[in-house]
View 1: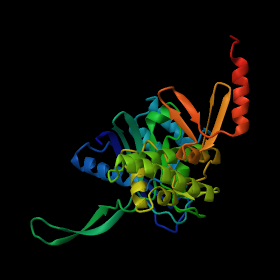
View 2: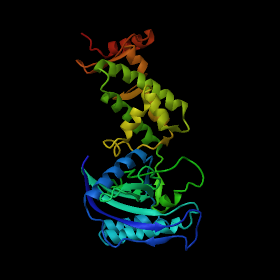
View 3: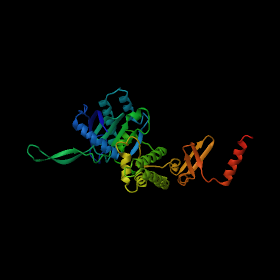
View 4: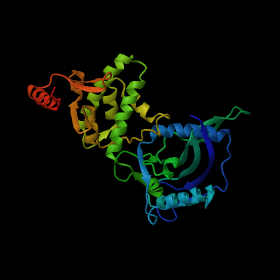
Amino acid sequence: MTVQIIEATIHQLDKLAQTHGDDSVVLKPRETHLPLNDVLTRLCDDLIHMYGKLANSNGTLGVDPNAHKFPVHLHAYEAQTVGFLAFTKAAIELIADEMKKAFLSNGGYALFLRYKVDEQDFLLVVMLKLRPGAGIDADTLDLTETLNIDLAHLHEAARINLTRWRSDQQPYLTFIKGRARKNDVSDYFRDALSCTSFTDSKHHTEQVIRAAREFVLARQDLSEDQKRSEMVEMRRRLFECLDNNRIEVPLATVAAAVHPQDPDQFVVHVKSDAHANTYHLDDRFKPHRAVYVGLKRVSGKIGTVSLAFDVADVLAERVRYDPKTDAIILAAPSDHLKSAIQEHATAAQPSA
């Protein structure tokens, strides 16, 4: 994955935790772009990699221009009505306004990063925190106190796939969201950027089934015959998992059904850099029964003929496909069905 940085800048928000009000936040904007050097490249590579692991929610931007100001500024930037720095300053003011209301929030450095990966155009907005550390003076070999960017604790970050956003391919937004609880300290950040959760049950169920199938096919530890056998067992386990968690299912629970021996492998597969912008899966979602029932039941039409049967019928070879005749063959039909078919087939035959 090659990252092409287009432009970036950073602004500071100075605020102490357990404070709020108009005077609680001091905004220190940067007046220039960050230089596109090796330091920025290394930081962005690490940041994008870490974000890919932590982003756990998909969504869209709010559409009410009166209530959702960030998308308005984003449209102006996209239309080149305003430049990158003006856009980020408008956005950081929105973040500051929401931060003033958040009693438990503390300050940090808001990084705005526009970059491309392959043909996809992204905007990443993330609040960076500093952590104290120790360094060594190269000249004196003395230990010195340092402040380092803490990438291990990203709680406030959102990324817009601008390529998808332009054509309204939903979801085009990912963000980090804490476990469901009241008064999430990072709510202010998502509110400022007008992040709206994408909760399409059908989408998530379709994507998790596709991800599970592709995961089995990609396993290097299985032969082709073993993959076919595992695919059958995986579909059975996944159906039971989704059917037993109809209200909401965690991705971790799905992973345990897909690969019981090592569930983390499936999570890595879904969240890897290669698939992060493909599956668009939240950490929790509501299964869509009409979709996941297809894991155990097949249905379709041939002209006016409707077919519906369990996967078990295929495994038992009661239903099979003959590629030579391009036909679906039903084995061991009932006497009634045989009689009805024969009766109509005889009536359709021309007399000698």
